[in-house]
Amino acid sequence: MNTEILIDEKIEKLKEACRLHGMRVTPQRIEIFKEVAKSCAHPDAETVYEAVKSKMPNVSVDTVYRTLASLEELNMIIRVDNLLPKARFDADLRPHYHFLCTKCNEVYDIFFEEGEELTLPKSAEAFGQIKDYNLQIRGICKKCLNKHDGK
Amino acid sequence: MNTEILIDEKIEKLKEACRLHGMRVTPQRIEIFKEVAKSCAHPDAETVYEAVKSKMPNVSVDTVYRTLASLEELNMIIRVDNLLPKARFDADLRPHYHFLCTKCNEVYDIFFEEGEELTLPKSAEAFGQIKDYNLQIRGICKKCLNKHDGK
DNA sequence: TTCCTTAATAAGAATGGTTACTATTTAAGT
DNA sequence: ACTTAAATAGTAACCATTCTTATTAAGGAA
Image: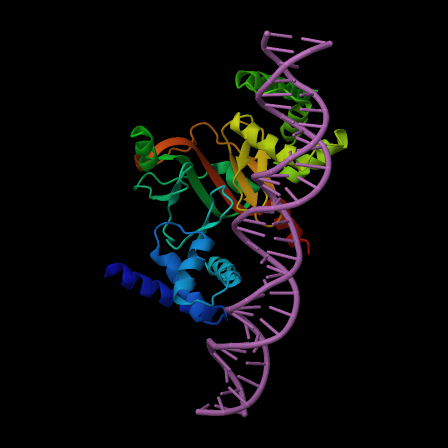
């Protein structure tokens, strides 16, 4: 299916990025990246670890953390700011933001429509050299609102 | 001086908020809040703990964490999203955002000018009930850029 | 192909920010 | 002042993440 192809493309990009940075292409790296890339749930490290373990039983927690950090370094994934103890990861690199449900901790992607793009305040660049920026919207998601209603 | 008065006003508000929520006004709460309110450095829990300890040597770490959490609950302070292991706190409740230096971890306040206000994408409210939102800009601050230049 | 170098890994221990537990204290209503 | 439940101090526990060390294997060289 389509997503499979997209993931394969992304994995090719990852391999390129590794070679470009003198980093080895290891099965662990591929598998860990694949897990983040195929999920739309913005998984945390533990979730990635469990998923990878089902295919590579000997993978270590440390490898998952180390690999997620280097994938971030390679700009292959981003870390989602969530004010929660567990870091969450996202392999969707298109500019977008997040809706964070404070009830169930689900993370939803938000894409701006054309013309809605967020512009930084002029004063922002006075603080230094901007690398990236990030908008999160916190609230209670539809699913949780409905659950509460039905009670 | 002026800031002293402002802090005293804020403390009055805190006392009111406590009474309103059936929470006791304890010297620990006042002192912990005062430390956050008088700082412009967006201190972390440990910094607050050390500062309070110099005045109340028996204060416990637990009290600081518990109190910071309840101050947040009372909407007297906010927790600054920073992707770092240590939570940072801010008693400035005016709508504003943050510039986070990825080198020195300093947090700078950014205020939007009139007309620059950030508008959320229309699609955002489709996800649920929005409670608040947050913009962070990440980069390298002027101070760190200059330090690097001078080397 | 085989060898070599060194990056990457597995396993488990350690770390560090935060939270939980429990006996004691104390704010604040009667 | 008396009462009582909330808040605190001290300390142990928790848990996500990182470190340590011996081992493995990617990928270039011979």
